[in-house]
Amino acid sequence: MILPPDLQERIDRAAFSAYLDSAQGTAHIHDRLSNGAEAAARAVVSVLDSEDLLRPYGSAPAAAVHGSISGYSTGCRCGFCQEARQLRERAQDHWERIQGDNKVRIPEARTG
Image (cartoon, rainbow, N blue to C red; front, side):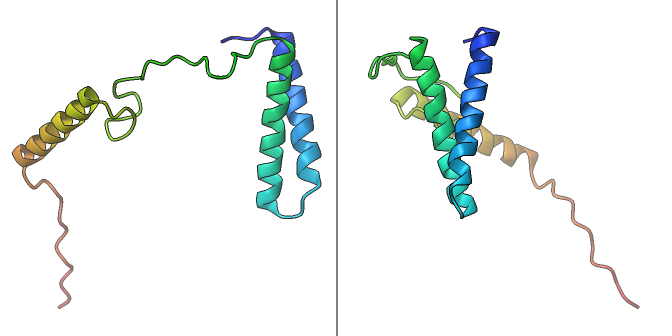
């Protein structure tokens, strides 16, 4: 979703201010990063909520995302995706067997 420039500027300003305010009050670096990131996220949600751009909780699409966008080793675990993953692994193993051993080995230097 592309936001109007003025709304994007409000979001950026709110997130930055919240991050700085929250991060300055903590001593440990990990806590500063965690607290700042959480405060920035809450500020962005607050701005989007004030503009009535948030989807109600629980109204996300119910359909699973299938395919290999994030790779066959992660993502959906439905039967179709698992079968596609196994097929890809078998094809990869087959290809590697056909290619054979193609590793370059440098002989050890002989000292004489």
